[in-house]
Image (cartoon, rainbow, N blue to C red; front, side, top):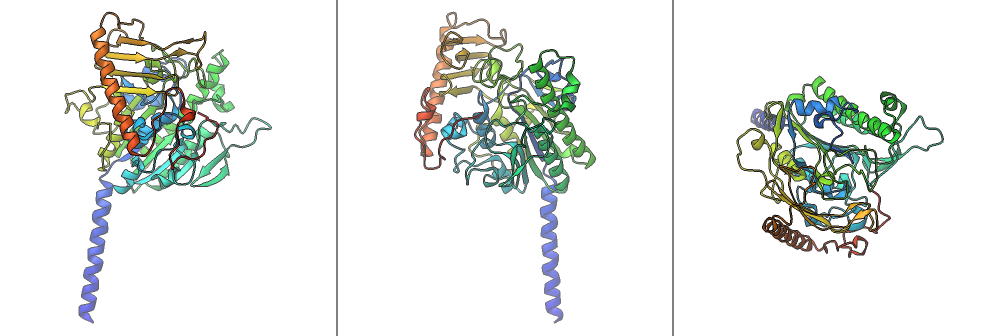
Length: 475
């Protein structure tokens, strides 16, 4: 009997030691918070010079961390960038060149950021806009998130309780539909705050995906009162929506500080595409001094805010001026969490911010959207090749047709001086790089059993067995 008790004691001691080791290993990992906004203009935060919309909490991430001057969204509108962020790969590799209900959801064969972090011991949660699949097998809780509160598709109403005769917006908790009880931007932030509190002793990853400032441009009286001085009503409501986002960011930062988690949390703020100033859900945003709009491959369609804070790892006030892209967020998060970074097009940005990596993060970056007037482009160093329409979404007198253009962004960030005729060799080099990349991602897409998007004919694209029936597209 004594021997049995002794063996039982050894077993309990070993189990306790194992649990302690696991807890210690998890505690040593940083928390990871990724905040994504929707359709925000490049010039609409204080860190980028905005004067009429105070964004103190968002700006604090730049003050206490890093600001990337030449950061890009992987796509020029909603779904493509989200697919790149969640997969860590150019979205064209997985066939997500358009909206989920046109070209299909993010394929099951593609490993996701939350799945990889979950395998590394993380608790995972999300609130807000998903837009990467709404049928069984493709929802957030099927793709690695332990918790989800939000909506699956594209644009939705924002649930304004103080507007009469307006039914509540439907949202999803886990996989169960329920009616929202508050303004959606407040709801997304509240869920993030709750998650941070509930998992204060865990290593966690949370994806806070605001649907602001996407249309419909709507705000509650609480936020509208802050901007009575703005006479342009669309800009005023836009400002109110963005202010609600800033309040939400502030609420999460306050909870992190209150619970003693701020110093061990990597925080990233990003936007999914340039502001829609001329086409597709025009909302009152501004991309100054950039040319172009959402759904275009001019800088105004793809250059976006990227701020990153991680106390002890990123020096406050750091400014990084080399080109980076959405997938770098994924690679940085995976590396920080000790997770698998295989088959990722992004790179870990922390060594570059710390001055430990002296080469540029990318030799070249690429964009392509065949289904939106076939806009595409490439950047290598300061040179950028652009083939993009401009203005209205549809061909006609309000749309400038696409042509091959070349810009030197070091001297011309506003892309006002086309240098294609003066530097034909540079243009040819960039086009050749683009064509090789385009062929490569199409080949990867076919390896998944998918046919890449056709030029100007997204609705005609053959669906794979994984794709749900198509519905009318929303963004």
